[in-house]
Structure formats: structure tokens, C-alpha cells
Length: 157
Ligand SMILES: Nc1ncnc2c1ncn2[C@@H]1O[C@H](COP(=O)(O)OP(=O)(O)O)[C@@H](O)[C@H]1O
Ligand SMILES: [Mg+2]
Image (cartoon, rainbow, N blue to C red; front, side, top):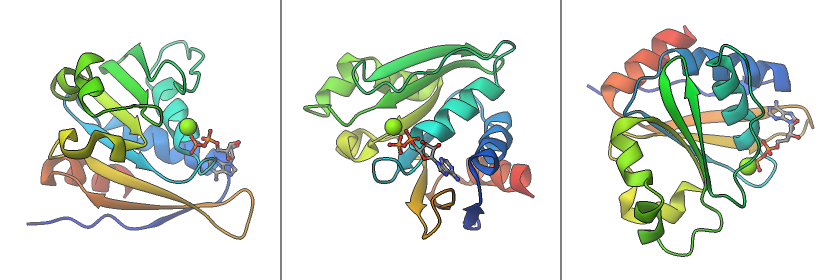
């Protein structure tokens, strides 16, 4: 069985916040979301909204552009937010502890192509794209394990 998630039109930043919190609520440790899209497409915005929706007291969620990885304690356990734009070699992801986090935490990964073959098999890809409208983005989904896609499909219904 393979589940296809529908494309979404994120009409405003608050629509992105709403979708991020719905998706966040159905995640469990061991889930990885691979966030694709050009600079400014909304990857960090989505990750920030998702993380904050899982915190009792929403913390500051800075873009991990320079630190590569930031970790957060949430109601669903540890969440790792990574921006791998500056990753020089996929092996560095292992040194950062990211490959272990794929099985023990919820992981949100920007610029996931930098992982090459180290990306976890059941990860779900989210593709953010600009539209003609400044405040609007398209979101489409690819891949993902059946269990993860089933949970997300229910969360979006
Ligand atoms: N519908 C939308 N969803 C998310 N972000 C949006 C949307 N419309 C406009 N934006 C803006 O786009 C920018 C996205 O930036 P950011 O998330 O840092 O991009 P990325 O991490 O993909 O480089 C933010 O300034 C945000 O306010
Ligand atoms: Mg970013």
C-alpha cells in the first residue's frame, strides 16, 4: 500500500503555522521530515512553527544555519532541527549525532540532499515552493513510510 498525500496551498504564513502544528501533533520519535525548497521558501518557518506548537512555553527557534543543528525538548520528546546547507561531507552528519537522532528523536532537516545516502529510508519529503503571490507557498509531499503518511493524512483530514 502506498499513500499519496495531497498538495497544499499555504495561503499565508499563518496557514503554514496551522499545517505545521497539525503535522507536529502526529509525529513520534524516529520520524524524519526532509524540508526541501529554495532559500526563503519557508522551511525554517515551518520547522519553527512545528517545534513551538509542541512546547508548553514556546522558545526562540533560531535558524540553525551556522550551528547546523539545534535540539529542543518538547511534549513529544527531543526534536532536532538541522540546516545542512554548510555540511561539507555526509560523514559530518554522523559526527553531529544526526544519524543516531534519526532513530531516537523527531528530526526536521533543511537541505537534506547533503545527507546523500544517509537520509533515513522512511523519511517524508516536504517540498516548499514559491507561487506568484508573496505570502503564498505550495507544499507537496513525497515518499515517507506508510505509517508516517497514514498519521499525517489523518492529521490533515
Ligand atoms: N505562506 C507562507 N508560509 C511560510 N512562510 C512564508 C509564507 N509567506 C511568506 N512567508 C515568508 O517567507 C519567509 C520564509 O523564510 P524561511 O522559512 O527562513 O525560508 P527557508 O528556511 O526556506 O530559507 C519568511 O520570511 C516568511 O515570513
Ligand atoms: Mg532555513
